[in-house]
Image 1 (cartoon, each protein chain N blue to C red):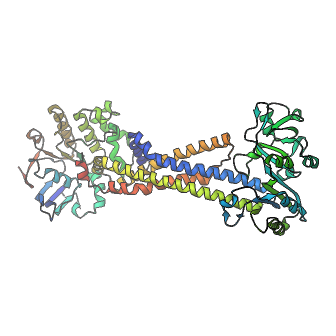
Image 2: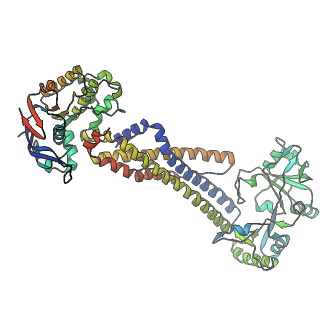
Image 3: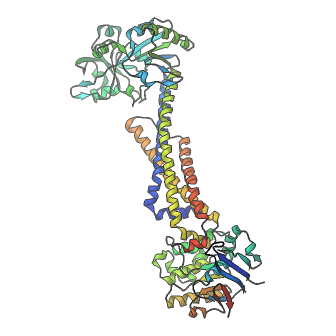
Amino acid sequence: MFQYVLLSINSLRANKFRTFLTMLGIIIGVFSVITLMAIGEGVRSEVGSQIEGFGSNLIMAIPGKIDAEEGINPASMAGQSTLTLKDLESMRDIDDLIETDAITIVNGVAAVGDKQSIGSFVVGAGLYLENLMDKHVEYGRWLTQKDLDDHANVIVLDYVAKENLFPGEEAVSVLGKKVNLVNKELEVIGIIEQQEETDSIFGGSSPLDNLIIIPNTLSFDINGNELLHRIFTRASESSLVDEKIEEIKSALIENHDGLEDFSLLTQEDMLNLFNDVLAIITSAIGGIAAISLIVGGIGIMNIMMVTVTERTKEIGIRKAVGATDANILLQFLIESSLLSLIGGLIGFILSYAVSIIIDLKFGIPTAITLEAILLAAGISIGVGIIFGIAPATKAARKNPIEALRYE
Amino acid sequence: MHQIELRNVNRVFNKNTDNTFQALKGINMIVEPGDFISIMGPSGSGKSTLMNIIGMLDVADSGSYWLKEVDITKTEKSELPMMRRQEIGFVFQTFNLLNRLSVYENVRMPLIYSKKKYGKRSKVDELIKMVNLGHRRNYLPVNLSGGEKQRVAIARALVNDPRIIVADEPTGNLDTKSGSEIMKSLVDLNKEGRTIILVTHDPQIDKYAKRHFKMVDGILTED
């Protein structure tokens, strides 16, 4: 067997450029599959653990109707938020719900002089977001009821936002300094402790690691409305979650004139939804990758057919010196498999390198699993064998006398 | 027991068509161990067809072909390659070397398919030296002269240590001097006890043989 592998390597080296072009389909296919799996697995693991970190009794209200069983209807998510302050108050009135708070997304860029905090996620929040999001102030303080009541021009920065606006400065010395946000001058009152980079259920590359918080009342002034983008709450006990969801639902439907234009999600729903979305994306891109692999396989078959014709004389010579049909079949089958396997290996190495770059450069977590490695190897060898059978059979069946006469 | 015995062998091409052609007509031939046989005849007389049948690359339509104690015409087709590599070494007019393999790799090639333990480097090198190509061991065929290429082919034919060498016009593509060298090699092999069956249409080459056959229109006669 080893000798056949050497023979195949020798044959493939004889036409290096053609070999490379033939491999390209497999390289792209395996690269797509493995990179996708690596990103999917990494994001699934990171986001999953983050969602689990919220605790099993978390309930989140979001605008738009999502059916956790059937997945997302994107149309229902379009347009403005449907959640209001009234909804927040209604939820606060329900017994056994604690730390009910909301966030309002503010479309603005914080700046200090010519320094801007690009990419910051600016949100209006209340008193409890600090606990709900596990974002604790290390220097200074969190928002107070007075800040909310006064629409106070105050701001809390996380460590990344602080570094963007006040690079190199001691966190404690930033307290009391001014930050401009949408024509307002805000005083820094708190710096959130530095945390390891995480990923967010909000999507994208870690907006929660570049967070700027202002009083929600101030965010209403800036946005020109009192709409909320998320409302968070916790059931005092996890056994109460289902019951509380029903109560919240009734209250909010009443607020919305009988219209259920919002969704209530538990930690499990969020995980399911996230996995559903990931599965849809994975299937779509996986399908494209599969097409690429089939095209790559057809490319291998095509080139192997040409190779068999070109090497007709060689087949005749090998048969004349004692090769059996099975020997010839095996030789060409190993050659097509090797072609595909090397393509797969290159695709895998590329995807490994790109996964590391994606992780380091864009902060999107990636994880290449043993399953992915075995899949890459299996796909490569499988494609090589399946698409190599026809050319190898053609080679094995050649009549040695006619093959020897071939010029 | 004869080494080879052909009894009333016939070979017909394009059977049941308008182009039916009988290449061999009732061939009878007995070859003993150590024979040096030449078969002369014009182009298209059936010499190469006979060589292909003796070399088990082709099968007779009727008659019988006995190689040692085995009736080849009744042997399973799948067993013929094994018989071929054990018993027969081929030398072709056009050398039939693989151009991307070195001299060493070309000579070694039949061992890949042999049941014998693969990797007899010393045996391969010994044969390369025997045909005076030790200094060309790692050359590609493209860098060899015609005579050198044919010597590589002879070394390759011997690597499985067959007792019969079938040579189809082995000097046909060579100049006189190279042709003489190749014939000297075949004579030496014959002296070692190997049987040589040679096809040629060159009377000068025919002289090297001990037994002389003529083939005309598919009919074989011994002088």
